Amino acid sequence: MEDISYKLGAVQVYDNDLVGYIRQIPFEGKFLIEDMDFRFRCPSVRQHFTPAKFVEILCLDSIGALHRGYERAETQVGTGVKVNKGQGGDGELVFLPHIPVQGVRIVIYEDLYESLQTKVSSGCFFDIRDSSMLSETNFHDPELRLVFGQIKRGIEQDAACEPYYENKIAEILYLIARAESAKNGRKRNSKRLARADAEAVDRVKSMIEARISEPPRMAELARMVNASVAKLQNDFKTAYGCTIHDYSQQIRMAEALRKIENSDEPLYSIALGVGYKNPSHFSEIFKNIYGVMPSEYIKLKKI
Image (cartoon, rainbow, N blue to C red):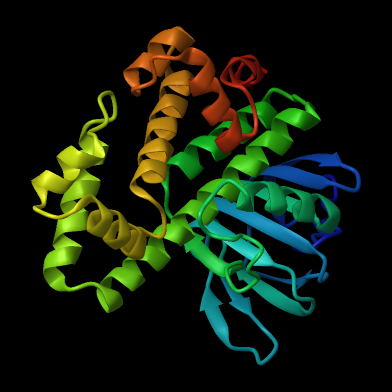
């Protein structure tokens, strides 16, 4: 079998003990992406090397491996979406036999990562430039899975469209930042809000999610929880790290993304279905969040 060798931040394989494939599309100096589906015939220990100036994002559907760090402590490598910000250093991966390693791997080089994180952080409520966030963290989010599925499909079709993949990486970083923002919001909720206030903002959040096509007005939400508009706005931001308006905008755009990805519904109809009567305004907000106009996204998804 042909030798498969990683040169950056992953396993090096130099023998015929591996069955399967690793499809790689590199974009020199910016990023590389891989579609992985392989397994080892025998238990295998492989060295890995982690240069300091890159970010690795993994979406693993299957893996049977242990990681050994500096002090030889073993940790189980899990499935899901995992982000590693390179800090430098070496280690080992211990692969169990016959268990497939399946998923998508993205390595983002420093220069591109810095430009993307600035772009992403300007459009969300959690600053992805906070290095404490990107440290071996697992994320389980259906939208993240959707974007990784799109990347995998592009690799399988040998599509080498750099702007397409760059936009997908920006989407992934945005969704990770949004998930971290929500997590931090929940922490603030438990520490800083009275129980009755926390329950009130939870009800408001549920109402917003239930009425994507006809977003409730602020006064209606305030009446529902018997609070002033100012208090509700303040409590919601304390709980979730964003304003009610911005949260509504985020979930409406997420629903629009799902519709664009999974249907051939016209854009004006999608915009109306998520509460935007003005298609131009809808397109502007979509681009602010996902980095591409919805009409361009439709073209790119067909690649």
